[in-house]
Amino acid sequence: MTKQLRGTGVALITPFTAEKRVDTKALTRIVEYVTDGGVDFIVVLGTTSEAPTLSKEEKALVRETIIKANKKHLPLVLGIGGNNTQSVIEEIKSTDLTPFDAILSVTPYYNKPSQNGLYAHFAAIAKESPLPIILYNVPGRTGVCMTTETILRLANDFKNIIAVKEASGNLVLDMNILKDMPKHFTFLSGDDTTTLPSVYMGGSGAISVIGIAFPKEFSEMVRLGLNGNTSKANALQYELLPMMALAFKEGNPTGIKAILAAQGLCEPYVRLPLVEASDSLKEEIRKALK
Image (spheres, rainbow, N blue to C red):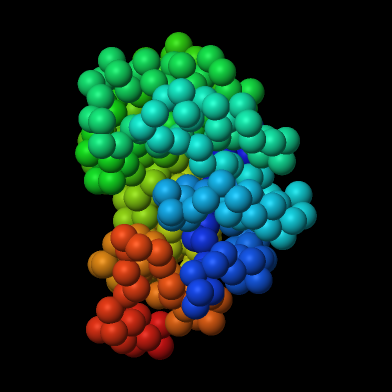
């Protein structure tokens, strides 16, 4: 599985209709678009999917739609995380995990556990999960940051904790993980802007947001970086940088949905408490795409 988690993964959005229902046609279209664009794996029901606003039935519909559209072509990673450890374990146990290759699990948000609490949370999940686990460190969203020591402790103590999606944007933290992580462990960037620098330092790729809109360019950038072709990789990084900024200017997935809508892949609708991108951002995106 570690070899499959190399290159570019994309954390898919959940497109909605004007009535705010799951738009399965648009979701199928996006799966086909990123697959044709050359991404290496797909993340289902991650943070970008607006999973907290989806019902149990809607989550099942999203899973089924992506599985069907994927046609067993790419590895699939399923997001199952939360701030109630027992609920996370119960969701893992009650979900058909057969089509999936790994679970992506975010650090508990709102509770703000200590480092020992974070360790205990993921240790409990690792003991119960039939699939390998990718840790997801995203302090900007959760209010808590796993330290290098906690990530490496989990990596060393549990062979089924196989990777980290590291989205702090802190390259010093990234370097310290990369310097000391065990051989079975994979480093994936969860921050689009620092993906390429992390690859140069020894990372294996990314789970990307901007890669949904620009799968060909982002995948190629990562591929070139992994192969040591820095000049071409850097050129793509700087080409994508303005779009990365626009994607996150009014939050995620508001921005990426506006970009995908401008590309004709889906509508820009999001669910409360998120709101649709402003007219000014949509105009900036239109100009940037030209």
